[in-house]
Length: 461
Ligand SMILES: *[C@@H]1O[C@H](CO)[C@@H](O)[C@H](O)[C@H]1NC(C)=O
Ligand SMILES: *[C@@H]1O[C@H](CO)[C@@H](O)[C@H](O)[C@H]1NC(C)=O
Picture 1 (cartoon, rainbow, N blue to C red):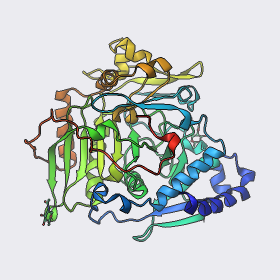
Picture 2 (cartoon, protein in one colour):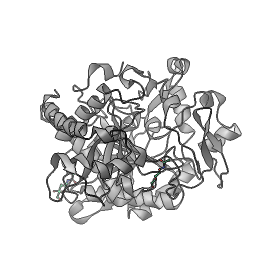
Picture 3 (cartoon, helix red, strand yellow):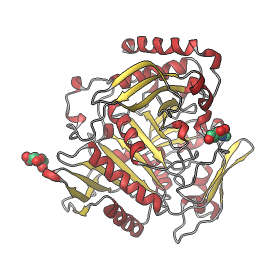
Picture 4 (cartoon, protein in one colour):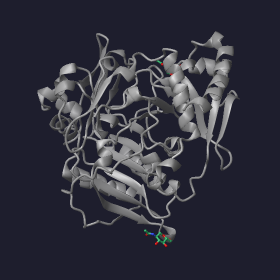
């Protein structure tokens, strides 16, 4: 399966070996010393209409993309080099019985071995602080390749590309504390030290990453500050999970739409019967990737400016994007206490209390607190990483539901946020009345095909 990839990997390794004198230097240093990295230049076709839904293609036509092969090949190579802090493929995972199929993972290593991060969060937008942990400290051996727009309409791959000084590459690096197979970080313009905030160009890179890997089991996620991002240096995460996320299975109802030229447009739906209130963005008939991206980016910018924390899940190869606003304005600190990062609450300055504050005030169910799960994008989407065997064994749909409900907006607040989004993305109310929210969740919803995953990372049913 990975035979095609091997030769590229070998080429990349040879370059790295040549540079092994600097092997342990940090990005900020080695990039100017070594300055050779594989480069994947993605095709810049944002103005082309979004192609047919990949799920409607017959299975044999669903070919693995070059980028998918490259990513898996290089990631496995890093695994064989022992660069991860633990072996995620041995972590037990199960689908919790129930309607949604929440996914629980037992991962005893992650929380203790996470990179140290300490900073206070009282705003969704905070300036970059060079004294805090950031990805300029990523080791060269952790970087897989550069991922940047190509200068024409075609994708290109260069196994060893000189990084000219003065250039700040966008890189894909392994997450040394993975929560699933293929867990990577996408760090736009790493040396520019952008703070964690959505901007047009960076989001376009993330969307291209999802669409060019072209695997429905590969999702790209984002946490804003206040929605459990722990590092204030712009980054997206991504990994493979070979089952649908529960959020992808939730029924949705169209609430907003934009009619573009010739019927092109964007459709925004709300999640029904899901513990977290949220939005799903999809391209309408004949819309372009740019239309979809603009609608999401404009919405995120509006939420950022209004100090509303949120998570983003890019699913279905970039064709469906979930935007999940959280609790409300925030005030807490991540602090290091005896080798563990704990959350310490500062001040909240709004009428509604967010999860972090509820935690401190003791409003959150003690049982939930004891499991110490922070609901970031993966948890909110339905993949819950637990660090205690008992919690894993006892994990029920009821528990997952309760945990996620804690971070949801209230109905009133959701309506208010819907107003912001409608205004920011220039969308009109367009309610689809023919929806029965009580309808059964179809088994066929969410991605189907799955045969390329190694057996040890398949989820136990
Ligand atoms: C953060 O980034 C700056 C570059 O702006 C770097 O000099 C510094 O060492 C980094 N700090 C940490 C703790 O990683
Ligand atoms: C999509 O748009 C084309 C042309 O603009 C039109 O012919 C077609 O009926 C539309 N399809 C749907 C499902 O609206």
